[in-house]
Length: 225
Image (cartoon, rainbow, N blue to C red; front, side, top):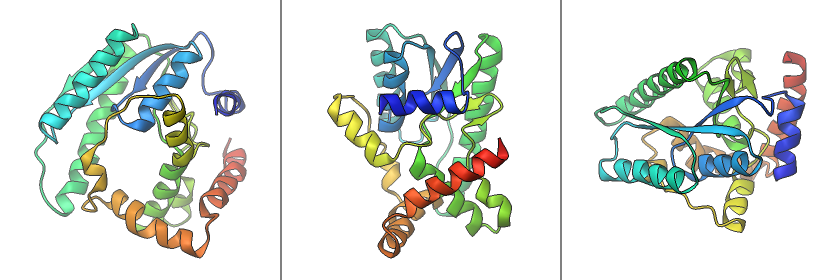
């Protein structure tokens, strides 16, 4: 998988060896694998972790996990603590949207203040499929097919060609520690509902749906680039 990531970074010219990278890290398996990969590839990385205190002590444990990991591995890190109040049903999705907006605003602030070249996120191929489905469900039409770009201004996503299955296998193979987010199991959130209930049905219809989406995006991305 390491070679696959290196090729993807080169193919889409995501960043250069001398660039300074801000790695968005929640402590979950996706971002910890991303952090591990960038570290062993010897990029200049700084970790950014935002604690919204949405899961109480679990959120604080995530933060401490990041602090301990970065301290042990001599990786610079930046933390933000904001309190958002969780509500039920549709408000949960609005809360996710607000949290995402605040998080990216903070990342951009850090980028400017610390002479950072790019913000790196751990979005992967399964996230891409969910994003496209969510966009189309909301009635975005052809525009919804755009999904997420490998590189969007200062935000780069080097794992977009990697599946969740590959990430999990890599984490186990290399014994990468990570935190489980209990909210990922809740179908109160639209993306989780797609992940747990819709995508499995689509995979029963076509087990290769993820590969088909990846192939479509490779063609579409060439046109857009």
